[in-house]
Length: 151
Length: 122
Image (tube, each protein chain N blue to C red):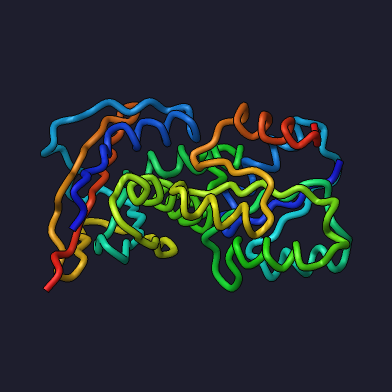
């Protein structure tokens, strides 16, 4: 198990500022998306000395704003394919920066993206070691690090 | 100047394309993985610079760089790894394989511009 715990707040703020020009403000740790809200989740898995996953969950509205920025199009022109690509890359960047802060040798999976309402993301055998909620220009963003204990 | 962007994320390719266009690159090709990028080089010859992601399906960036450097016809092409892989082991592996520079995601326009300036391609 890693002895270093990455700072999800710093990592998240750096990524959102650099890629989207959107500063993120810490919200109450318990802050979450509203029931029934359409939420986009990007996930990358960590394997190696630290086993686990990093998830990035944002509202559909925030995801579309971020995607529109990366593709330089109007929000109304964002396709579901574009949205999935953008949030997958966002999870990849977040996971990559988390991985860099962990001890030992680790590998990162390619990202996967889920879109829906009222669902829960779980990674079998893992537990949440850090969860950070943010206010991103009025929308909720949640970044979570899960690790799996070795048998 | 001609550039080749190799990244499985279309969103990141779009960002890099705009950035390079703003630096007066007039020929910008894209590939979604290393194999597609090799096909692009085979069809159109080496670009002045390639911006290459590491983690991609089919063929990753490290293998792409190794294959590019195994053909002396590509010696003129500078290679910048643009990746989330930030640890020293990955950097050393990329440089040993033949990458010329290394930039971390998330990147800013200034960082990419500075890397390209170091290589003399802007």
